[in-house]
Amino acid sequence: MKEMNKAYRLRPVSMGEVVSIAIGALLSNKLRTLLTMLGVIIGIASVIAITSVGQGVQKATEQQIQALGTDVLQILPGEARTGGISRGVGSSSTLTIEDTQAIREQVKTAQYVSAYLQRPGQVVTGQTNHATNLVGIDLNYLKARNTELTQGRFFTAEEMEQSTPVAILGSTLLKELFGTDGNPLGQQLRIESKNSYEIIGAFEPKGSEGSIDRDDQVFIPITNMSSRIVGNNSLSGKAVNGIYVKTNSQAEMKLAEFQVTNLLRMRHNLSASTSDDFNVRSQVGVVKTFTTVVGLFTVMLVAIAGISLIVGGIGIANIMLVSVVERTREIGIRKALGATNRGILHQFLAESVMLSIAGGIIGIVVGILVAFVTANTFQFPFIVSVWSVVGGFGLSFVVGLLAGVIPSQNAARLTPITALRSE
Image 1 (cartoon, rainbow, N blue to C red):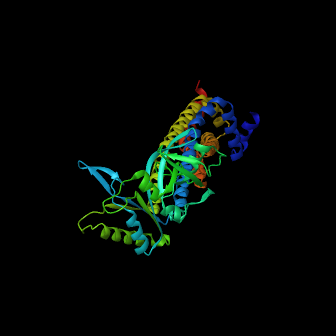
Image 2: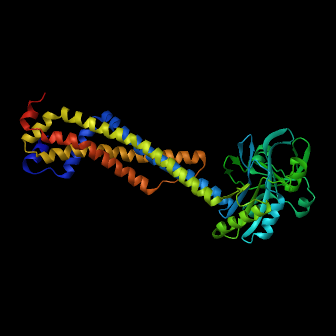
């Protein structure tokens, strides 16, 4: 204490001494200091974790969509209506295998065209029964959907032409029926309890597409699907649930969409005043839409988390005001020994900023740990952007600065006599 008093008498207090005194004051009541920092810790950790998780989910979804091909158009049938109520896109039978063939022959921007037909169904092998999605595909599916096999082979032209009962499993279905290390090749699979299929291959994992797990599916020749399982045709040909069009390049997506739309309108005999009875979707549009939605959702959550920072700032301001009252006599002694108003202001302001910065650093570490654990638990990329860390640290500094201004000014304005008379 004598050395500190001597410093006040002989020279202005240096910044190092201000920091040293502030640290001593904070460590003198460790529990109160920790509780005061808690609001800042929670706020900064929430901002870091939410931002990281949002970016990770966004990146994972973009990767899944890009794996399906950003140069791919998906054509879906129109909407069926019952009593004037729409049953949703794809509920009508307005697309046919013949439409697929026409697109393949007449749309020059189309590199690969693939039709598919799907239904929910039951599959059985041995004693295992599993509800899955049955998908009929054609020979262009691998190229149009950017898909590879991990086991076995794809359908042959002869099998497609003769509607041969052969099947390829998605990775999820493979694990459900045969386990992680099971070999399905050559084994028999019953579909809908009546049709027996030979398993000839398995697809690589592709993740989810909307609400559909693309890996929990069994794939069979579309000719077999149409004749043996679905058995219903549209008035103008064999109905399909959708058509994939892989363009020559992403730059030709708009042109391909225009050409496909005009061709299908002509084939379906639609007048100029009649709306399309089909829908053309782009994977690029899906990426942009999802990115926008996730971005807005992340901003909203970060804003909510920011409320914790405000609460934390109020907590720091409250504790600093209490600290000024508790240390009034100390302030009076220091002023009597020559401490200036600026010196007192700097001391209490330093305590407030250090409280907030310490909370911010802990919050950054906690936020990164939470983001890392979440990313590993739910299997999406772990991303921590530099701006979120720098922004979190900057926010903690600003919060401490603002929260300490009023208490520090109150302390600096005290006169030595008033302070020394305080009990």
